[in-house]
Image 1 (cartoon, protein in one colour):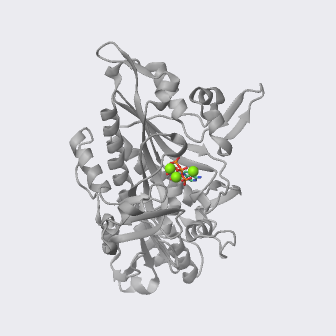
Image 2: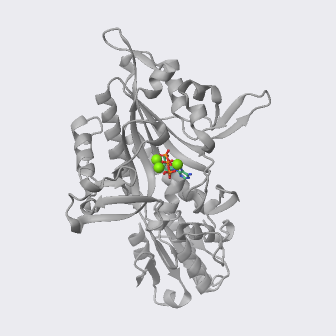
Image 3: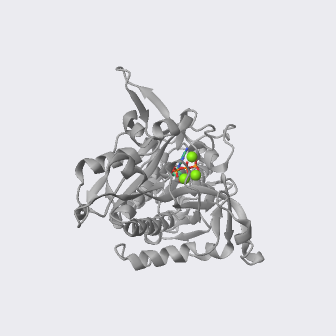
Length: 439
Ligand code: ATP
Ligand code: MG
Ligand code: MG
Ligand code: MG
């Protein structure tokens, strides 16, 4: 992409309404524009990162054997009356009437709708196990929408639902989700720690939240510091293997890690004092097992091998896709701007032309652009007639992992400058060497 043809409305001033750094940087980098409280337009740069995050979530869900679907954002209130949640859900639910006076709502979550889909088609245990998921917009009329996309009212969520014959099978689905979430967050350059949590309005007994430690997080958390040493890394896992998934769950949940809702001082005090930590965290996901709560209420049953009709065991599993942008920036920035992890960056490499209009510099930039593109990368070429300082500031603000700076003086010696956003280190080298290093 050539910056002269792109739409990147960066702000010079720090927006006064933004209280936390990720919100400030998303506004300054021209990623989002608020349209009303907690509701945002996604401008090109923000949209690109959002799509990258979605892509990782899709890949990891499908790697775990989960099947993508897409359900509508608007739902009929009748489905929610069946589960009893229409009255219970409270003021976070945006209730709407259509022209015929029928009660509808903008979905805050989809247990009812997916259970309705399931019961309409599946009758036999032979069709289990099944996990369906979607990435779709949700609406919750939060009392205090704030911190930008972190606590929006309209927000993008990956929500997945497992249907299983037995509790054991459903617990395997739970464990599988835990493993796939660990992989998902790590690919985004994040450490998200599974912590024992409370199930809230979804209902159920078993649940873990995934928390990214950050001072600006809204959750209070307590944990054994050893847990931050755990990494899933690139180990191979067979998602069909009950033992393998169970082992990962045990590894990642055997140390003390809880949100304030389930925190227990007595148990916490058994952790050696020097390892006890209390901190704040951002909830970027949650997994639940809730058994037959919805399947019984809504008649989602299958015939088992003894010809008995039994309600299926279910769980639901969410990832805060749009919140993740804020969480990643909270975890990865400096005073100049964002530092995107490679896995989600909107562009892989920036090209800064120090003397736009200079024949040699222009040609060298065009050639670099071509080489990077041919290598399958997505570069952003700042080809504007701007001061070098302004170009550098923009590149630092939008946080691309690499920057190649091209100017007539360097070109005389056959070199360009390659700068790593994260370390700030610069090195002069031949253009081809810079390309090789970025690729
Ligand atoms: P919170 O405790 O932050 O209100 P939640 O527990 O109500 O979140 P869940 O029902 O568990 O949310 O939804 C799954 C995920 O969706 C959450 O883990 C979070 O990452 C994301 N999420 C929830 N509410 C919002 C929101 N208002 N804005 C952005 N993301 C959200
Ligand atoms: Mg909530
Ligand atoms: Mg929560
Ligand atoms: Mg939650």
